[in-house]
Image (tube, rainbow, N blue to C red; front, side, top):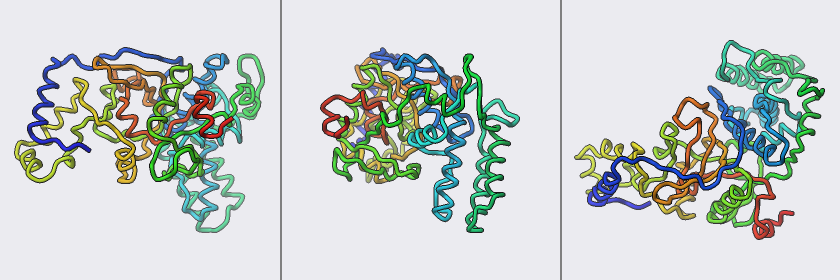
Length: 392
């Protein structure tokens, strides 16, 4: 990462000031049709909201019409799968609320899906989702089964009753737009094929063009993704977005450059106090450098950003500064007044937490550095990349 001297920071400050507080001015390059923003609220289920949004966009792309699919129908089955996995791993499994896109696809293949109006997953006194108490009881039930080294009939009743109490009983059949369905027959009617979706990532510790299990805690199902060069991963996302597809994105949103409130995520060259050492650092501290650096994070202007290389990306991953934090749905591309490219991104934190209806723009530098993986339809790949990955 580039180290700034005091003089260079002062120069950056003058460049920022010269833009006269115009703020970010975005021009849309391409934008695909998607469904409305939802709110995961007090749950760690971004993986499901992002993937559901992505699949709803797929249905729009396929000419199937607009659907509002039930996230919590999928979440419930994922919880059941985690409990089973945790027990067989003697309590060493992952039973947290988080996960990644393959958990959506596994649950969809197992039990199907239903519309949101059929199963909203809230059977408690709240307008919004909240799994804090539910998750605590789930962990206790899981722990007791491992201690007993046995899953009794009562254990199975307890787990089902727990989810029934908090999320509501599962519908065996339901009526939707004048037709009768089961969750499985409704899923079949959508025409979504889970084998059509692939995940792409880019890290240097695995040979390129190979499939591997990315080493993140939420990949508890050991899903495989293709490892490709960084520029090819970005090009794959660009190609998809400009050819009628959208992109499901998993990455790190814990950086100071990520500001949902301001509707932007950037990867500025001036990043944090660890970027400075020796005399320069002491001089910054003497002038209350932290406050000075915070001025850079007012997001009043586009700032110079890091030129991300595969080595920089890998260093972030191996130092645990780039982690699997959050999934969102990339729906298009834009550029700012300086010509910098951004990815138009639909979040799942509702529409009222920022002025942009729940959307934000992630810069190309941010996406290069902080992406864990992207998921796209295999038809969104170029012929060249398909051949490299041996995808038919």
